[in-house]
Length: 273
Image 1: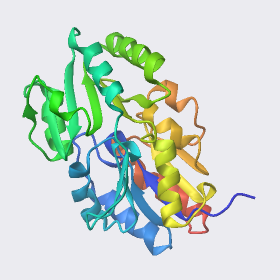
Image 2: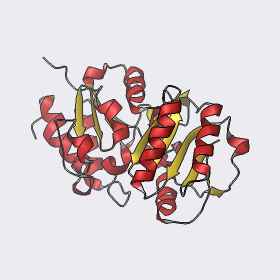
Image 3: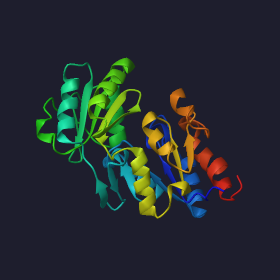
């Protein structure tokens, strides 16, 4: 018999927030119903800490929170439980791989966002997601020993797939290399993956992974979706992700997290939908 769910961990972009990156009232209300039933709630995201604080405040999250796919585990009061950075040799090599390719380069280090360009749709989205303005630069040399995340940005899916495969072949044993969106290729520390991240969050909350429900939508969510007791995938997830997970909810444009809480998670612990 499966254990009751005691903690829910949600991805953010494509999952918790709607397509406009907003947190809807229906989601806030559902999280309150969850916590009233004695179930904890927290978030894990590829976003930096700066892009998660307002969500933690809106949802009154008291549990540990995972930024950079779990590379930084922190609390709403600003204290840091754990932090893992990208090895310097990986940083240098990935930057070299990207140097002659038509991709934008973003480096997250020292709580700042450094970008090779300050223009474009994805930059505007990241401004909203990270709650920061980019520091525009072509020279990342001074940052290589303090990198939390590198993101290569392109709407050319084949190009990013190729860069993923090349970087993963060389550095897959030393770093986590995964796409958080179809147009983002993220490089983080080896332990900065959502599988290890959700395990860290569960341990800090004092529950087993069997007692954790997770919600996600992208390939970088699969490491946590495949480890949690109750994995739930969004309707807006790519086919390659949805095909691996049997429990589905509505899309993030249709309050999918709220729907999952009310119709899947709460009924499992005896609260009628």
